[in-house]
Image (cartoon, rainbow, N blue to C red; front, top):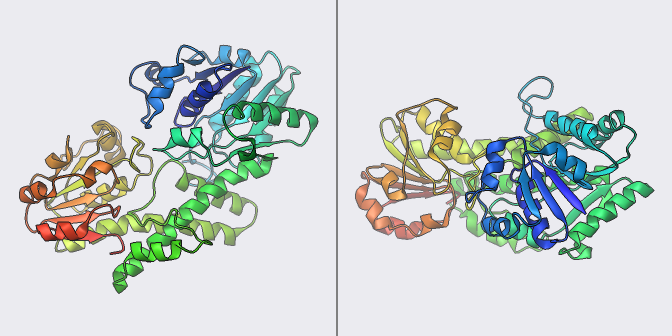
Length: 452
């Protein structure tokens, strides 16, 4: 069997690397038109950071795992074609700000139809709206030269920072297809790929539409829990309750469970907000405004939490941070990744700059130019935004520290040293509740946590 994956990003690269590792009898080719990205996959410095990924890629690269820009040849050779291209939120026209932009999906479908030299199984790996498979099938049928294509939905459920572990031991693999003889054969072919290492009882098969919708709903439910506990964090601060104690108490209820009840400055990443807004748009499109409003409130609460954190910082620093140095520790949207998409740090930095603060950012994995581009826009400069090479450098002379990403190294810093180097009174704002605030208070810091 030969597999190709169109799209060498956060989904396509790791997923194909794991298939190549677990199924050495399958030839896997990852293709992308971005030559720089492919060059990075073929180099010693991968384009994305995930713990354990480099070892997997090095183990199989050049054997049964190949990275190339030759999309056409890969399509011709493949039996199964995974589509893992970007599906960003539309920034123009009908549905702007909510609907998924499917231009890349359509472009790939047309390319497959033009280059295919026989029947193929097409696998949707990108996160897409329900009924996208109909669009793909329609384009393929109109341009296929008589070849038969089967379209499957196989959404990814990876969490950045733990993607390799998620791929090695997934909670489930979801495969949706048409309930026709050809569809069933295609489903079985993909089941056989994953069965090289995933127990059969963890491979779920459904119809196409259930599979497509399940991805959006899974992310919506996870984000909903975060926004729910974040809303309670504000109430805890107002009443003197401790959000961690509240979360622990309700998490002991087996009907609720403890996961995704960690209050924070807000969720980020490429999926949660994008998928919820997509769900909102779908609900509006199908005449369900009340359902749309319900899910939109999850995003609104998340945005409010980010701005509330920055506002609390300003208020604590005597209602002014103008010309004060604020050290922002962490810029990635979560630890163990260099992904900054929708990171809470972007909103926090922008709010502080709007208050005329001098903002110094340190992140162990995110490049300085990416931080500047995310906060200011590409090619723009602001002397008040500085990128530090260490947490200690960022804290030197600062009036406050704001922990925005839960990197483990931030728990292990010498805070006595940091306190001595800061302006007094020295403040710590823990946006992830990872620090021992009592110990920091004993050192002399004025501390603020989320929901504390």
